[in-house]
Image (cartoon, rainbow over all chains, first blue to last red; front, side):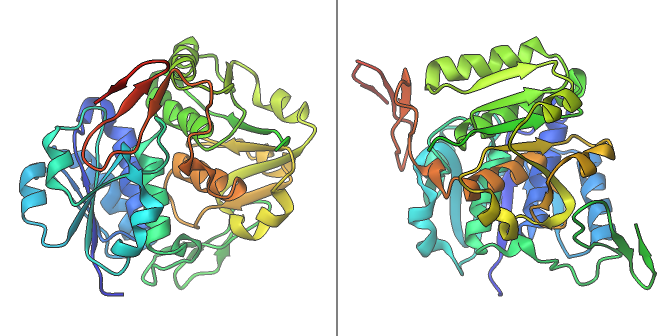
Length: 177
Length: 177
């Protein structure tokens, strides 16, 4: 795979959205995105996510404080906005897989211009729910279920599936349970 | 379908987790669960979710302040705990579909007893991410992609897919764009 998948989080308010945006960033990483761009500056989230990357591996990047219109304009690939008002995402997927895609997810209010600036406005169910869930379903479909594998070869910590407890392996170490 | 799917949210702290738990409850409803039980009392979330149900339809129920051990003990069906430490959820799915299932999702700390009280500890990827995303993927697989349809026949508001804007239909009314 050489396609690049970038997530753009707009409308983040550090005081109110820290936990939801953190979930979105962790989902982006775990489900195979290359990076997340947050349109509001938030050094604390950058630190939280970088810490996860340093422990659990991969090359996922996070940048905050990039204006959303600048991020969209400088993106050369396909632009997708996930919104409950859009058309069903699964129908568009064959046109997206294998291409460079920027996925835009909003908080509560999304500037109306976004709907016009993107190539696709796509819904993950036409119901109010969660941009975290929408992002996860979209990425799961785009990468065709790749969340089930441990893809992060340089991980310092690796979780081994366990039916009754926790198994974490530290690189070059014995198994901790 | 006559199976019952219930979500149990544990470790909710009203001061800190309101938005994340709200997302989890909306995902539960949108992806086909029958109800959500929150182990901590939080009348504000009950009100938020009930308001969505009254506008967007369905019979989804929310109850808060039910101790988690009581909720688990009184459940007669299969009990599943979603955790990044568990075994891959897709492998267990054939044993779960069509059965009554209670899906337990935690906040940061989960009491160790949970791992023993459930029938399955299942992971949606062995990486740290989000219980909201894990719940969405689990329900999407359990109900086999039913999020793409508007299942809520008694909805007062219905969203009609639109590639460039917002279309909301109010029952017995013309289309608002």
